[in-house]
Image (cartoon, rainbow, N blue to C red; front, side, top):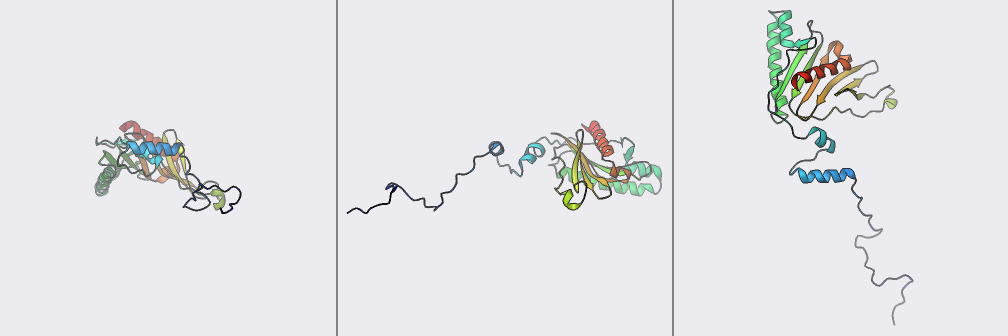
Length: 222
């Protein structure tokens, strides 16, 4: 005598070995997933650290063509020249030191960009009070990035860090309760990145002026 089965019994039903409830189907890839999949097929052996970095900051385009720092950028001269002009006797030692440091920094910047042409140059005004460092490399770079912070939680008007755009130049800024100052300003394309960092003096709190210096250097080097 056949065993009576409950209503709805299906003799052809095969239990899912993964158990119950049945697993949901994997999510369909969105546009981003399809894009990454296409890039994987194109970049053989490439390591995809991040989609935005790959698309805008890590693409090819570096060049070993040399880069020469301009003698002047607006009202600012190369630091060794300004130091020697201000004090020909004692300024020579300082000038030699900065030449050596900038040369070594240039070599490091080049090495960090697959031996692309690069230069690092310290600039200052005539009284040596306002200074900044120009970094230029014939390679693309990622744009400036600001870590997230909630100004309301911190009791501030603006986040601790933020990026402001001045035309083609992006500046990473630091906001303190009493002031805003420049961390760096940069402009980049497929074959050139120009950046200004280590700003001191009155320029430190004038990101628009620093952005103008980036554009001035870009016009000289592009």
